[in-house]
Image 1 (spheres, rainbow, N blue to C red):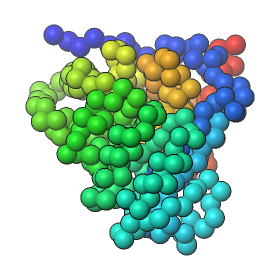
Image 2: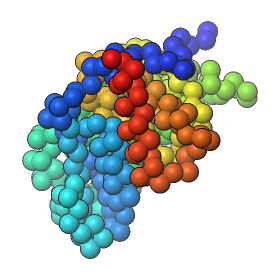
Image 3: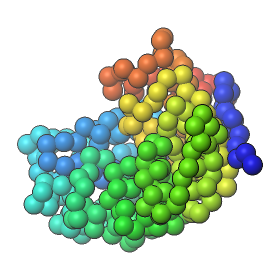
Image 4: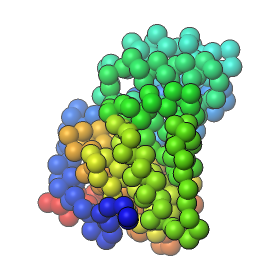
Length: 294
């Protein structure tokens, strides 16, 4: 039996999403990014730039103070005590739990390390905070021994690749079999199977974008691979999902359309962009979509 899904191509399935977007920054959502490790915060910075381009009201990051010399006094970042490894861990947990309620949603899993202290921190944030949380591949790995913290959380959004989705299914000991040549239908079947046992929502990037939320699945083809630009998917999805919390399927499917349309706007479609070029393309794409929705 083939899985049921809706396909989104040259026109958005939910154009009203772009008409309904907040026009005042203070109503456009506050997003907190949790990540970074010693000497590295490139993905944190990139998601910050993309979320700003996508129209988030405010975006800040919490990173370990082991980055002080590298990050300097970055305006968007708060530095908290690092674990001995230079990553975020138990030493930062108290401050994170105090800071997070001032925001509307968190993104966890940007430049995180794979160690026991970081896993404890991620598990504690997911367990103790009653906030919408966006989780990436790194967060999936961090809680691999307790995957239900992700899949059982109705306030969670997983932004991942097919490889990350396979990892999450494996953590649940869920058998996956893909027949040779099955292609996108097999991918949709896997998403459908995992979504059926999950309370969370999914946005999965591969050669296309698959969204699963509210018991529905959408497929949005891409003109080029998005896999090299994880920050684009995370930043755009987090922003539109947060701004459309009452309609997560519409918000995420619209985020997929923004990413697909952004790639189509490039000549030729390419992911070989600087983040300055990427954020400019996202802003221009959203501007066109909002104008078309009026």
